[in-house]
Length: 223
Image 1: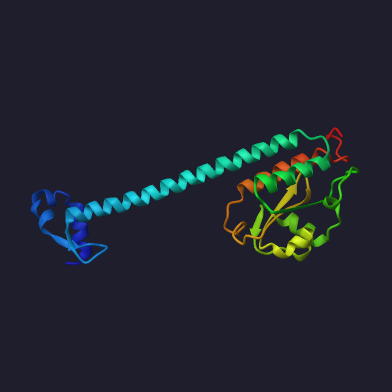
Image 2: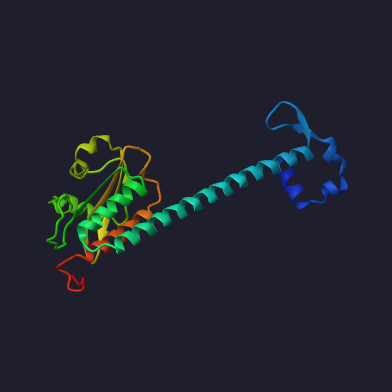
């Protein structure tokens, strides 16, 4: 008889230990963590405790995840309120940079825009970019997170570029691609390839919608 046969028999005949109840106390097996022997009853208690610890860890993980999401949602709400309260595109950039740096603790932020007509006071955001950068932005179906970006994009951070080790690239889209929002951090684990991008995607949608309001070539913008 193989061990699998014994296990299958016991699963199919749960009344076995009702008929041979003394075995529960008489059979001695090895303790999973030290050299002593214990009864089946004690081993079952240990097994239940182990399962309880696993469930507790999963519950704590879910609680922490929920609290983290709540905190991010609150920050996003504050950013929405800030962007709704402004009346010029340069003010939008000021509010956005402040929120990302102070509220979300992202050290460096850069934006480049195209396919937007605006004659107000904005500098670097409308600087010329290469066709390669536009192609990168248009190819992103969702935000990119990782440790490598094109050298041209990295140079948007100027003197701070050499200290950055992880990046998030967020495409800005309306009826067409209008630009790229890039977040940079010296922490190599801040933006990593396996991380979730839902909040980054929502950030991109928020920023895109806010910017399009100031597109002077858009007849429905009201500007």
